[in-house]
Length: 205
Image (cartoon, rainbow, N blue to C red):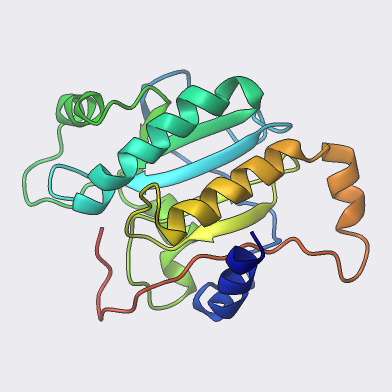
């Protein structure tokens, strides 16, 4: 997989390096629609993938749902937790039952919450500068540190974005939490994973 790490290094400038390697911020005030309400603190010791999504007019979210569902099915018992954060983007009035319907249609069986006013999305992502997409994904290690960011759009099995996320997930699951915390104290230890970012003028799903 040397080619993959080379490719990820070449596109590193596309992702803010001040996010990678930093503790993830709290999830904040969310409305939980499926699954038990949780927090990153409660999930400490697990690898956490947080993905913002919207519907019904987000082809990127629909395309990425296959990968999300597959990771949840295969890797939940190995220590991966996925959280889907819905952010409303249509002109229609928000309806929680509609979101539940969208989540069911996409096959989501992991916890779903609503980032109603985009407060968490803004803190985590949009406030950091010009963003191409809002359907961002954050991969957080067992110690609560952001280790990989996919800046939006989709990841589909077979493409580079999918391969980068899949490898990052598997590597973090294989890490021992105590050893990983110690390694960050050693200079020169690789801990940054990146994904490419397109740059249209305004954020898209």
